Image (tube, rainbow, N blue to C red):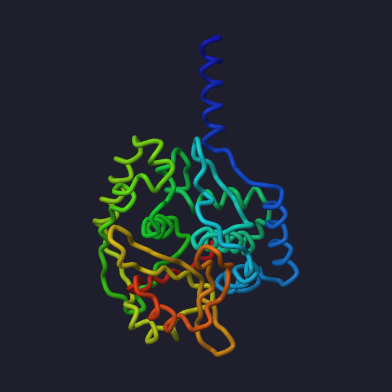
Length: 284
């Protein structure tokens, strides 16, 4: 009996490490402020795309901060609402919007839905369970009916990725450098993604589909960087000029902002980006 209790304690202790959440009081405060904003502006009654755009705009001016999810030790659900990279910005805006639409506006629900979106099948069991490649994030969240990939419907053409960057550059990732045992799993995940066919809209064709884009669509930029799939992500917003612009967290030493130029013009100015994948959030 004592041995059983010991094993039970160790299992529970290990589980608590796996499912620990890392956040600050400031994160809770910001979370509640987003929910208060939603109630004050009656966002729940609006289409989810409009909610995503509104919540996304409420982050304008927030500092860009890279690698906020990279922590030592066991994989935990990390929240940092005071410093965002392009992917965490998109995830937070999407999660807040899903909760607002379902009137599930509590911090615990925020934690639960973020885990559901950020991890493969919504389950945390190690570093490799996080959806590191955004193409894999797309695949998993389409399966979970969080988003719909509408790129093909917009006239997108097929693309197959040749991913190898993480497994080929483990020294650039804290966990892979310290835990090389994860590398074969990452390599297997890359190989799996490489078998899939995605669709993208080449950068010189973005203008031709602009009229079909909606507020709050999630935009992923395909890249020519060897071994990678997506180089950047952001949110489509319609500005006073009547054009679709990109709301995003651009790069280090910047803040969340809306592009000065429309999306179709902005992407033409980027040398390494080849086109876009367009996702539309689903009501649930």
